[in-house]
Image (cartoon, rainbow, N blue to C red; front, side, top):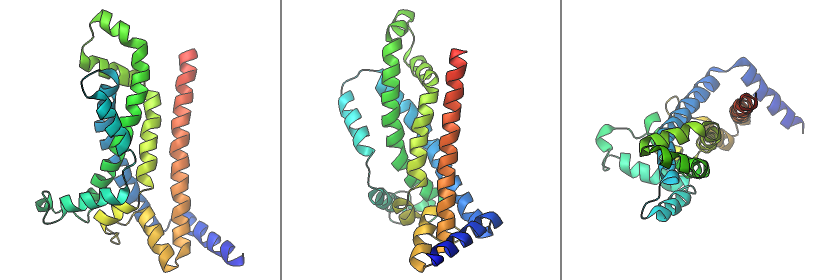
Length: 235
């Protein structure tokens, strides 16, 4: 018990002192995760909205595929990304393997299906309310997607939050394509795994606390924004 409190105290000390290694690791983690989530939203939100708003041959097959891809095993994604980015792969000449860009690519592959599948459900529910109005006004397909995305924007923040949660907690894929190289590709989750195996529990616990704090802060910000939107709607 005494050892636990000592480790906890040293972990808190690292956070309060804002240790340089801690700053570097947290900064890289946020850069990689936020970049991946942003790219996933740019791809996944319009894709999900299009599937949710339109009826076309093979639509159910697309929905099944999107829902299935939500459960992609991270190590499989990491392996696929590794094969694509390795010297023998199609993207080998770009020399992206073991770089933060490779980690962003792997996380984007993981997060995009989640964003697309969840946004499809949100937009489809929203579309049922506006379908007749769109038809009567002769609204074009692109305008429909834009209008639905805008109307459902606060619900879609929760979708983005789900993608952020998936990305920020990722270990398997990023360690395969990133290599967990010190001062290059070492992020919070991979550092926690490494430092725990080395017995450096103070740094591992400090990063764990920061990771939880970031998740809580992002969730709180989204909830506050949605609550403000609700109040404005009923004002």
